[in-house]
Amino acid sequence: MSGEPPVRLGAGLPVLGMVGAGQLARMTHQAAISLGTSLRLLADTAADSAALVAPGVELGDYHSLPDLLAFSETCDVVTFDHEHVPNEHLRALVDKGIVVRPGPQALRYAQDKAVMRAGLSALGVPVPAWAPVADGGDVTAFAARRGWPVVLKAVRGGYDGRAVWTVSDAEAAADVVARAAAGGTPLLVEEHVALVRELASVVARSPSGQAAAWPVVQTVQRDGICREVLAPAPGMDGDRAVAAQELALRIARDLDVVGVLAVELFETTAGLTVNELALRPHNSGHWTIEGARTSQFEQHVRAALDLPLGATTMTAPYAVLANVLGGADTGSGLAERLGHVFAHDPGARVHLYGKPARPGRKLGHVTALGTDLAEVRHRAVSAAAYLRGEPG
Image 1 (cartoon, helix red, strand yellow):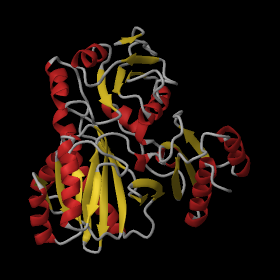
Image 2 (cartoon, one colour):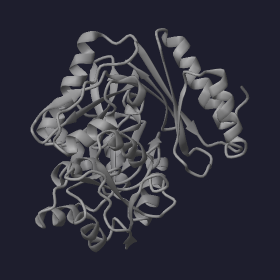
Image 3 (tube, one colour):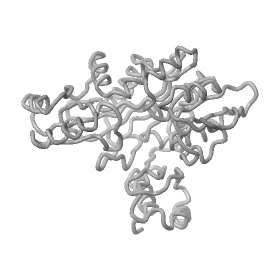
Image 4 (cartoon, one colour):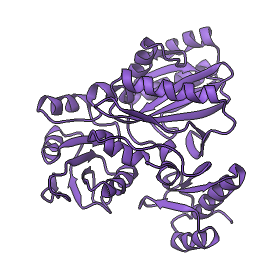
């Protein structure tokens, strides 16, 4: 592990350490600046998204307990921009007296989907019917009870549609199970939910128990990747929106989450079902940078340091986020296209993550605000498509 000595940007102010230096850390760094807080990062490489812009960067391996310990000793509080740090390492940090927020007991619900499903079920939270998978027979037995198709998921890891398979028969299921077994990947099977749309309720909670919630949003997914976020979720019944916020706040309290919690939801004709949890800032909350009085990134810093939480009211009636995904020619001419976007729509806000372009990769996002949802959505989606390299 290598890096410069700790950089403290304000005398007497706490140093927040973030394990991981992707785009979430990059945007958290920007938010920490306005709070006068020194944010240190444990990065895999100097080319990581946040490592390109932040001054306090340590290079190290989050799988390595010695690297984690050496990094954590330079910080007052440690938090995360991903949930992949081995839980036993997190417990070792706590045993050494290091303040870890969220703690390992809470983070395991985001690290292991079987633990999450079982834990939420024990709390009476609605989740899809599911079962662990040891072999293909478990899948066919589950399908005999619930019907085809079913969804197979890797218990650990997987995001943006990766490590998730929808299968329609025993042969397809057996193929997935065999490939997962060959790679040492444990699976679970769950019912294929007939959903109306996908929603997200993003909340934050501090160690003192203060909590705050942003408006519930609709996420638009294609090929397992979030393409758009509409805030607030259009046409949502007020009682159901409040129920979604209350559900997320209850989960944060009952799991003792500290920081931002994103609860991904399926809206069905019968109500709300929890799909996934993320105990960190989340793509469904990026719109809050411009669209809310306090962004999810600033709120995460406030919560981790046990500062009073900020207001979550929206700055405009509607905010729409559109992700900029890499295409075949996205890297070529991006700077020129960026200038064209700003000239065409001075109100559009573009966040680029400093990542090399490759097809399907999230390279940034565009946020537009306004009073007319259709117009705001068109602006955001058009700008993101143009930045990707699609014809404008």
